[in-house]
Length: 56
Length: 301
Image 1 (cartoon, rainbow over the protein chains, first blue to last red):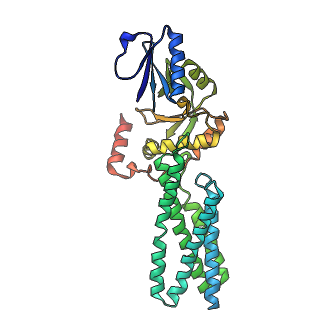
Image 2: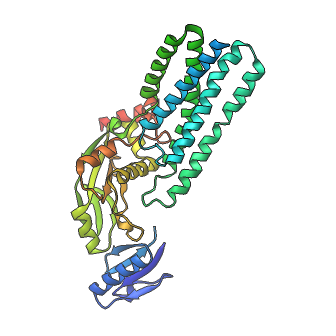
C-alpha cells in the first residue's frame, strides 16, 4: 500500500495518498527517509525525482 | 509377567531415547526453549509407552486393550496443531519470518516423529519379548540407523549448486547478478547494502530441483535459515534489509540477498546448503511423461 508520495514536481503526481513536495532532490530524499522511518515502511525511487513510501 | 515387564521397560526406554536423538539431530526444528523440549520428551515417553504396551496386550491377547491403545495413538494428531499454533504465534513477531510452509513442515515432522517413536518402542518390545535383551539392543541399533538416515530428508545443497554472487544496483534497482531483487530508494541504504550485503545464487541441478526452489515457501525458508544462522541487520523500520530470494524468470535460478550481522560468504553458502527441502515444496515433474518431454524439447532448442 502506498502510504505517501514525495516529489519535486507536483504536476507529475495525483491520487489518494498524501503528497509531500520538496524544494530539491536532497530535500525529497530527506523527507522520504523520515517518512519511511516514521511509518516503518520502505522508500522506493521512481524516475522523475519522486519517491513512494510503501508498506509491504 | 517378568518377561513382559523387562520388554516393556526396554521398549519404552528405546522409544524415549530415539525421541531425544531426533530432538538433537535437527537444530532448525529443535525447540530452543527448555519447556518445549520437556514437553516433547514427555510426549515421546508417552508415545513409547503406548507402543511398548501394545505387544503384551496382543500377546495376552487382550483386544479391548489394543483398541484403546489405538485410540490413544490417534491423540498424537493434535501435536501437529499445538506446534503449528505455537510457531504461528512466534512467527508474527519474527523480523525474518519462517513462513507458513516451513511451520507446516516442522509441525508435520513433530507429529511423524512421535509415530516413529511408537514404532521403535513396539519393535524393540517385540524383539525383547521374543529373543531377549540382545535382540532388543540389535533392533534398537537398526531402528536408530533407519531413523537417522531416512527421516532426515534432503537439503538444498543436495539438489542445487550454491554460488557466491555479486550485488549491484541498476539505478535504484537492487540486483543479484542478473536477477532483480527490489527497488531501494534511499542512496545511503544503497551504499550500506553494497558495502555490507552478501548474495548467493542458487542454481538447480535438474528440473525437479527447479520446481522446489521456485516454491515461494521454500524461498522464504532459505531466507529465514540464512538470517537465523548469520543474523540480519533488519529492524522493524528498515524493511530494505529484509533478506529476499527472487528468481530469474527465464531460467528459474534464484538469487538470495541478505545484510548479515556476520559478513562471511562461506557461512552463508553453508547455511543455504543446509536449509531443508520442505515437504510442501517437493515435487517431481521429471517422474511424469509430460515433465520429461518438456525438458527434452527444451534441451534441443
